[in-house]
Image 1 (cartoon, rainbow, N blue to C red):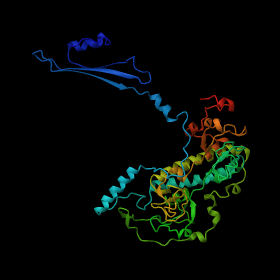
Image 2 (image 1 turned 90 degrees about the horizontal axis):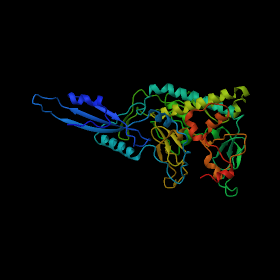
Image 3 (image 1 turned 180 degrees about the vertical axis):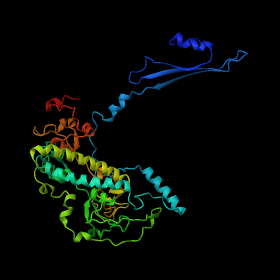
Length: 443
């Protein structure tokens, strides 16, 4: 016979005395930590009473479950502050974006199918066919890319940008900062201070180019034949392979899929000679796709139009980044694990142009691996300046109080655009930068 627990009321205990029942009683334990609220439940189950007066059985159980507050999830969506992006060492290979164990597992499965003589199952666009649902995305990315180049070309008339003459540092403000972190060849003579010069649009949008291929599944580019192919922005080449039609840069559109066994292509529909209409084309029609000379092509904006242009540029930047992320989930893009070279296609090229870490061991060949979005469309983080017309930013103990943002976001923000919330944690907007004397007293 069970006795009534002291924490259970008489109204809840009365049904257990009359007959069989099943219920759960919950109450809070006050001695638990306030950081995690728990509920303790007691469960009683009585069997039915037979004529002989015997009870089949009684089950008693207790459970303790954590209670998740729904408001905590909203707070975790955008943290207050995040760490600055890490700087990868040049004397080391880049980490694989896909875990190496998963790469080995997929290669092992493909090898097993090849040994059995079974073709590898391929879906568009891995089999050479276009993905119909991504064609509108490619056109949208290319249109936003043109708007982004035009907007930055106009905003650079009113937003000053400085770049270091010795290293890759960029600063968006009316004057360069005074941080001693220059890694140029003559930094010891300048005590690691930067040598600032006027920047250009290529300092904001880092030019990442790739070879244009008429047939990505055709002949691979060799070192001797590399001058027979055009170099265009990698984003433009990705849009062309995703279905965008540009007469100056034709692309082969297959009607039958390719067939592969393991890593060997057994049927690619034959090799087709690449047409070359670009020799007779008007080069002026391709100017909008490149950042070269963007500031000279567009006139200075009116003061009343600057916030509007800044917001359109910010929206175009987000459209390009979202679209490239969506396209790269289906279309293969390769990047060198040592340098900044990018190749849009299922395999990398064979041009021996890598001059980074241990390139002598590889005879100048690139170490191809799957590319990330930041390698195709680099964010190019710069220091966030709260007061562009104020005194220059100082290094030393004050450096840990500053935040960073992509260069395009910083330019648009200073021009009057509303930036997305996801960039604000890294910019550290809620941190007050102390004076140089106060910074030494901060732990």
